[in-house]
Image (cartoon, rainbow, N blue to C red; front, top):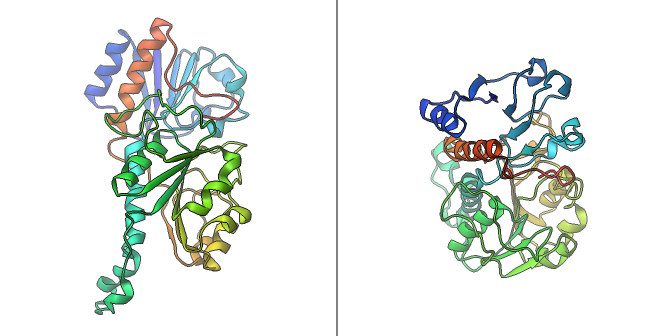
Length: 332
């Protein structure tokens, strides 16, 4: 069996050994970067990648695709979903680092860090009272999307003394039995949220929230789900953190909510267009913290991901169901 890894980092000797123990005789090929569409995939049975070739005729022996991303939404409508080739995601590997990013940026807002750090830049002692922050204890966080990332966000924010609400596509299914690379993290039994809401009940949750965290996957059902009407339902002075793919929150609606002052502050890590062009209107929006899609970029990714890949290789060889198999209709 040949396994082709299209990944930005070279495998370590230990990672290579772990994969080969999962499938004795496995031949591992690597490409650090570059489009897979230009590769002749003949003879390759397993592809590990964040991009799937659009022309599968060049990959006649492909039997399984393992994605590096937590979601498969870029593949909606892709020819691979019209075949019997299983596609699996890296869901469960990003929860802790992305939740840390959410906690970090939430506390940055609470302690006015963008403004406080001007002191070092200007060397001018400020009016400290004008930089007063606020306590997050006792405030309410609403998490839109309660998968592995949303659950770890809930755990960390709850540890700060916050009340947690959540929106989930199927709120009756509260337990999470999917892959989780981080022992003791998340909320596998769904015990943390005080209340659960379906997507069509978003209007019941938003007015209660001091912070809204958007972790839902990007799908046709979630595209544009937060727009002017939803911002109008939010508390005056609420805040938002977006780590999901761009397009779930309507960008111009977010900008208007910030410009009007209805929304006090927001953090955005993912955008409809990436890289974000330098003339994008976001750069001129007040009280908006922008980061270049880095919430899930962590030096722990390989440590979290390769045990999943090794386990799925064992399962695939034995003919067992694969972990994190993507749904061709939902995109995750």
